[in-house]
View 1: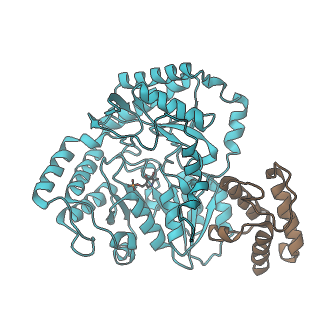
View 2: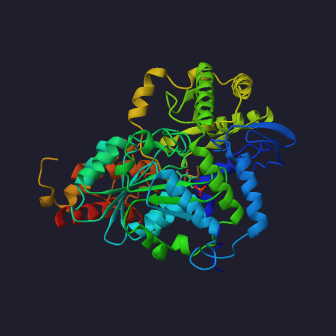
Length: 428
Length: 88
Ligand SMILES: Cc1ncc(COP(=O)(O)O)c(C=O)c1O
């Protein structure tokens, strides 16, 4: 008899971690929202719950203009395109959305994909061919790792957020080879920022092109919300910006913008763009409305950073060890001792009416066990205070003394010695 | 690294890889050419990655990610490193 194809999963780290969940504990990977009341509240298990793990940073899922635009498009263009962008799947909305992205980013070109995952898959695997070299941050998102696995290029990594390590590795590569460096603006698990100025400088020095995935920085970083490249003033030196509509844009889809003169050729060669159906017209319409709204969303940006600061300060005040010492993003990740502590805390928080994300190795860098919060511009101060209060209650109930999680003197050293992650399995 | 890597023998490379493995070999498994990283040494992929980076730094080379699946034991890594340093 031939082997059961499922046997291999017995040793898969995610399957193993899942098996360790205590009997009767709700499963963090099987949460169901029965009703969604707003950007920040849903009913889970019959309980009204504050959501603080949605990546819905700018609260665009219920933006009035986006809702309206989606309704109209649904009526006028139907529920789906039933085809690829290169066949029957390009409607006027798709090209208008690309116009909107070009305007938003001030670039010559924009290309819309059906997800951000596919945007990374397509751009990275198409740009870096057989004789080229892709250099990625070790903590890259799964979509970037998968893009590398899909393409034919030589792939190498540098230590997370370490521009001098990148430079060292670039210096070892053949001068004549085509090179693409891929980084993220903000890293999804810990919420830490890329030192883009230094990274860009290293790329320029060695003639490498650079792609920045702004999935977790679009909307609230930079003056008009374009991301970290805008905030740090290096947009002109970034060759490709990749993004998603599934976070600050509040819907689904992905994109890449660029000024490269030959960018449009990608539409003819990029398989994850060609061999999948295009986004439904309603999604396209809401994305367009939300992106237009982002430009002028200064109030929401202010509210988002206020909420992030409040949550960070509150959790820090309780003594929790946070993944970033200062607020670097609306992602506030609480580091706990082990997987069981994370699972227990998570489940108690849920019972207390607060939903956060869990994240374990190998999906996390540095082998960290995280309760990952992501703040929304629509969170009120009262909601943030309630979240902090529930964290305090749960820590008390489980006897977790957060400030004793790790001897504090060790911390700065730990940070420096942080090993690279196997983010290949990351899901954030 | 000061020495000319291209003149190293396969055994010298293997020995220096063993030195780099040393601190990671918490269970003091005897290191032979056939020792595998994931099964014998029980290194998680995180640690393997760090090891790759330190081997790269030792020889100032690039060990592409694409090669990792074919580098399961110490000998295979030594062979790959030798090929790269001699090819330079
Ligand atoms: C850094 C990063 N890139 C890309 C993606 C993929 O985005 P999407 O949800 O649109 O597939 C995500 C989110 O999952 C992400 O965190």
